[in-house]
Image (cartoon, rainbow, N blue to C red):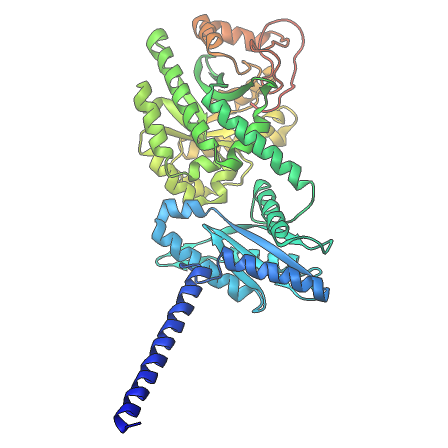
Amino acid sequence: MSARQILVLRENLSLTRRLENRVEARTAELHHRAFHDALTDLPNRALFNEHLINAVRRRGRGGQSLAVLFVDLDGFKRVNDLYGHATGDRLLRAVAQRLTRTLRTADTVARLGGDEFAVLLEGPPVAGDPDTAAQRVLRALERPLRIGPNRITVGASIGIAVDVNGDETAEELLRNADLAMYTAKANGGQHAERFATEMHSAVLERMRLEAELRSALAHDEFFLLYQPVIDLASGVTRGVEALIRWDHPRRGLVSPVEFIPAAEATGLIVPIGAWVLRQACAQVQSWTVTEGAVLQLNVNVSAVQLADAGLPDAVAAALADSGLDPAQLTLEITESVIMDDLPGAIAALHAVRALGVKLAIDDFGTGYSSLSALRDLPVDTLKIDRSFVTGITHGKAATDLAQRIVQLAEDFGLHTVAEGVEQPDQAAALTRIGCESAQGFLFSRPVEPSEILVLLRAGSAEMVDEWSGQEFHPKRPSRGPDRSIGYGISGATGVRTEQTAT
């Protein structure tokens, strides 16, 4: 073989090696991309499942234990809505880094998609470790994350599945952790739940209820009742609060206590809330046109709705479609919802307030608002919680507390409405301390629109006579029994205080 042939052969071998190295590198890169999340560089669902399957096999051979944590961020959608998706992506990367720093190097941390993460824990001693690991994750996420100019805090709902029997498959462990996570989220979030067998039936029930709620919205099974808000000085009906009810085709009237939490947990409260706004605004505007009654309409807004970026558009659409004056609409937000995320609530309330509507803090006195919070919140009304109203005739301390709330409202230039007024002496005490308006079974239960018409046409004089000097007996709602509707004025015997959700 000539020297030239040897040289060519060496060059070919060198080229072949370079090509092989490039192919190997490219193959490794493609393999990494196939099994790792592009945003966080954590293992993806496919790789996590592979690790979990292998861990189950090792468990069977060596008798080791293992556990799976399913981590779902709380409030991530709100971050995207408030700050944009670019900030949301940066937050996910920061969460991924914090999770890997918080857990052991031997633990597998993966991003399953969206704002869902999973953790695989294996090896002795596992007993007690899953709960400890979950608590470490919760504490780590309590600390704000610096994302550009923003300090953002997200909580997490964590489901824990442990191989208690030693014969669970990889699929079962991940599914059980997922079910436990949904239970943690349904119970308020920001904590961890261990999987229990009864969670299967609970999740099936939630799925059934979610399907029925979707059907109810599509087939007009919801309807609204209206509870009058009375001016205490004159007895005039100043406004109404719209309250949703569900006329289930098989179960009859379903209490809001049962279906509102399910609607919030599934996110269906957003389209249901938009429906309530449209229906209520149209109804009150019709009274304005036909009766000349300029009533204030109060509509409740949940935490999920407040966090939804589409709330201002839903309010604007309801006003535009109905023709209702924005100043006639008051959105009620419970004090605890506002205080849970004060900066976010302030931003969301300002966006809605810009439409010209009014805002009220519902159940005031139960969420411990600070004076600075009241100063910063764009609210018009404080609704005094029924717990203060109930005790107002039971001693000086309760009366003084209610009076301080009224005085606080006056200092901030806010209107006051007392909730849950059931006795004439409660109405009298509220009037003496300067409370302006009230609602409750003393004046009227939540009623259908036709009964509001009767009330409007009766005039204020009759209303004052009724609640100031007459006795009462139960009145049934026109749609049949509904424990959540209650009883109203009728001028006969006794008074009932059997009140649940309104």
